[in-house]
Length: 270
Image (cartoon, rainbow, N blue to C red; front, side, top):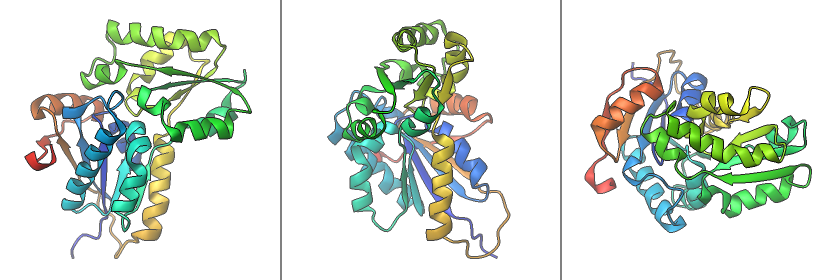
């Protein structure tokens, strides 16, 4: 009998979206997952919206060519720049995007101050501005752009002195405003959560949206891509990069928690 497993395509500016992919694997264990790290163009945070939109379209086209029946934009910056256009161009596909977790952070804070760690691109987006307008009246929200943090994760330097210095620099102004809840507004940042906790203390809550994205994906595909037959087999996971495949294999194996092989994205999608 042919497999009835659904195929989900996931992309990010680099390796950070693996934090979301882990939640998707746990939530949809039977799905076949295809992940693309656009590390040849990382970081997205300092790129123009038009550039990010073009990359997002190219990556989605590749994922569709590989059989993806649904797409996850595992990147806050790409969500802000390209979610609308992807939903227009690929209107027949379920497309699930990231959203900075302002609502749960507002519910979680005890001090009434929420800090946001994100890329400059996310913080400057209209999508994020709308979230602030919707929930910002209830608490004080303090934002902090974090140049350099994505690159630290891309190198796999999760416990380096440089990573600690950057985290200390970016969290200090938030803590001075008495923030007791920090939104990890980039999918790379959950990989730095242990180091962030070391710097800010365990009493400060860190909010990551990966699990919520996986739940929304499951809801969408269960309705729009129902299983054709009962299939309890564990799905496959395939990895690609637009960067250097050997380096991606080393770093993504560490972040994924198992040895993986990372293929090179075909030239026409680079």
